[in-house]
Image (cartoon, rainbow, N blue to C red; front, side, top):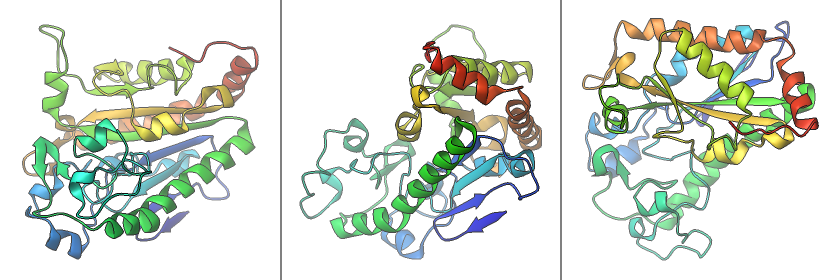
Length: 303
């Protein structure tokens, strides 16, 4: 069943499909650019898309048939970054003074990558001038809050049903990032980075299941370098309470042309792998019970 509005697309299993404690989110794949935003931007329609996680939600299309749910943003990351804390704004972007709760020391906001970004990839400014704080308030109230409300409610629902909730937060990374951040000499480019906040957001058993499956599928996988997981992973991953969050960063080069923004032949193959990954997690015997049992026995949730 699909719920659609201007904020997000939310696809859940049909009533006759056995549900699983799995929620996949795609907070950066939105491609609906408001006209007033494009008018205010100094960038053309191609350049503005540099920070978009293109087609990531599409890689997980159909997972509702496996009992999992998919929550995907419709609006782009350049307009509003849903993978940031609600206070992460920087004074430099605004013409009026920010209220004290927003004038934080967030490194991401100070780098121009707050909840309302000042920059897209490659340190490219989005705007010619500054914004009014009221514009940030509008975006947070109308778009950010409903997305996170839906996310939190779904995790609570899954936890109530299964005693465990598993969140897979899906993203993409430029191939350049995969090369530059792989410090190992003469090693192949990274295909997938799994972010678990260094074990704090996800039980190690679950991390190993995901990593092992992806490696068996022929992908090169690393953990937490260069991406350990953003706000969604950090905020919602609470293994000690039965809520597990793992971020998946996918190298864009393995499924799309980064210059033309077009899918290539690798897309269908990768989509099949991601579909099989969700099916694999859904098929693990008593996974929810195992994670809950490990927690109740006091076993470490770290990697």
